[in-house]
Length: 105
Image 1: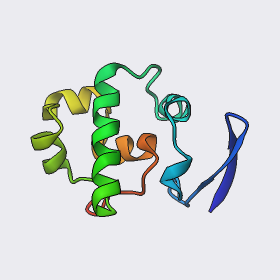
Image 2: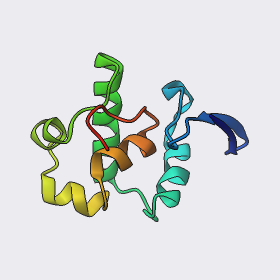
Image 3: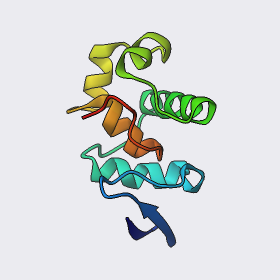
Image 4: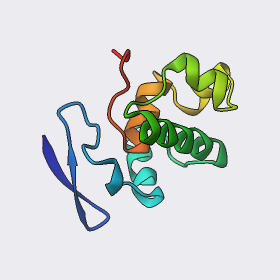
C-alpha cells in the first residue's frame, strides 16, 4: 500500500494503484486520476461510467464486469474503449476510486 498526497489529502492506494477507501473519492480527485491514466479531461460520458461503477460497488462490494458495464451503464462497448482505452473496466475502476473488479487481469 502507498499513501499519496493528492488535492492536499492523504489517499491510500494498493499495490496495483486502486484506492483502498472508496469514500475518499470525489470528482476533483477523479480528474487527477484520469490524467494519470492518460485521459486529459473527463466528459459527461466518463462521469456516467464512473457513477455507474461506484453505484455497483456500493451495492455489491465489487465493480461491475465488462459485460454488465456495457449492458447496464448505457454506454456501448465501442464507446467504453474510446473513453477508457486499454482496459475500460480496470481503468474506470481506478478513476472511480474503487477496488479492481473481479475478473480483471
